[in-house]
Image (cartoon, rainbow, N blue to C red; front, side, top):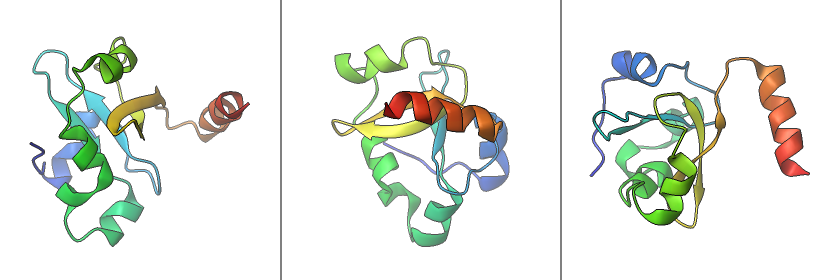
Length: 110
């Protein structure tokens, strides 16, 4: 079950700054905990972050075969998050470099 982490701690735990529209996360390999840094858009629009679709997807876990094959190797680093087949999965390794993110999106959209 998802739990709220204090806002003043979550950016440090995830290792990234809050993004205007993208959710960023980090899976801690030692504890097995996945942290979500909700987008600013989500913070501004969601009355309860535990009801956000990313939190709901996280409640399904990441250790089932499908999500784990995407998370394996992406632990312990900030990643842009997406939802696939109802699971929370990493999209790309996150960087604060907007140009690198844009280039990665162009490649993945082709």
